[in-house]
Each structure stands twice: as structure tokens, then as C-alpha cells.
Image (cartoon, rainbow, N blue to C red):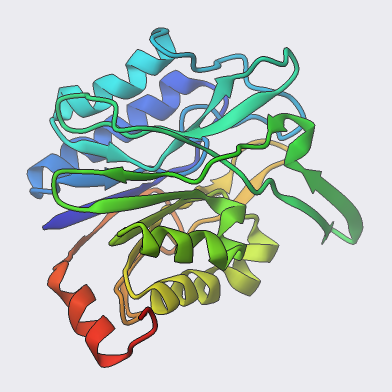
Length: 264
């Protein structure tokens, strides 16, 4: 089957982001892509210090806008996240939304491992803490599409291999890692970590990232990846906004697992 990942530079205005995504979904449809993966906070990118005003809530306008991407283009929309209303007025959930090609909700996942890091930028110390605006999720999630089981994760989860090993034991064949990796951490660790998760879990990994300068405070690394179960890079978006695609064969998973027995 053919899968795709859309890498964009999301901004606060959700209408601008949807316009970009629809452009690439049209391209994906023309190429025969069946499953499209979106990046972290694709719907609306805040400055990391304040919550976006465009919060998704079950059934509201923003929820329907995401659902309609799948229905309009009749493509499975997977992995991408949007800030979602929570019980606390000054906090949101960073939630992964997943819809089949008819717009049926396949299930969601709230980011468990929130990013917290001290980095240097332009010679100055800078602290980033997602806990300032997001609530921590509690439950890992595997969903079933018509062709495969998918393990859901978001960005900083990438550094916690036990999450993915748990997904393999639940039968996941594909992992999604929707991300907005910072440039310093991306340059240092992104390719290594994504390939490591594919190698140790012996499954396909779709790691869809944000790219570019989103606002005065946030810039991201890009390099969305589709990686095979042997750890081979099938597609790398590099820099810029674009759609990447790859043809995947789920039978490769069994071949790799037979050749190197990691899970017994």
C-alpha cells in the first residue's frame, strides 16, 4: 500500500494550515495514497507559552474540520495532533486524531511524555516546558485501520522505547510519531531515535514533523521520515513543506522478525 506524510510549517491561524494540508491531500489522492500522516499541532501552532484559542472539542467546529479532511478526500488521516479542551481552564491536551476515509473516528491518544528541555539559542539559555500549557495523557493507544494496527505516539514519546515495545506486544505493525522537534534536538537525535524505534520494534515507523519558523519563539527541524522494519529510510522530507510517500509491504515485518528474533 502507499502511505504519505505531510510536512508543513503550521501557524496559529488554523485556516491557513488547513489550506496547506488540503493542497497536499489533493496531491496524495492523485498519487493513490491510502493513508496520510500529519505532524504534531498541525491544526494550530501556538508560541509554546500560551494555548491556542482554537481548541478542539468532540463534535465542535474544529473537530469537524479535521474529520472533514478524511471525508472530503476519502483518505485515512492519521497521527496528527491538535490542542484539545481539557477540564482545566488554562491547560489543554495534545491529542492525536485519527479518521478513516469515511470520517469515522478510529480513536485518539493524549501525549503522555511532555517535552521539557534547557537549550541554548543565540548564546542564551532557553527553557521549554510543555507542562506550562498541556496536561499529561495517561493511556497508551493502539488503533486498528482496515489494513494494520497502529501505535500512536507524539514527539517526546520518541525517547521512551518501552512505549513502542508495549505497542508491538499489542500487535502494532506501524508506529506513528507526529512531531515538532526543535532544531537543536532534531539535528542531534532525530534520525537516530526514529531508526532505533523501527529497528528494535521491527515495524514500520512514520515520523511526521513540523518544519520552519512558526513564530518568534518556535522553530522546528523537519525531516519527516518513513522508515522500514530493518531501519532503512524509505523517505526523508528534509527541509521545506511537502508530501513524502512510500510503498510499504507488511509482509516485510515477518521476514525481519524471523531473521532477527527480538520478540519471543
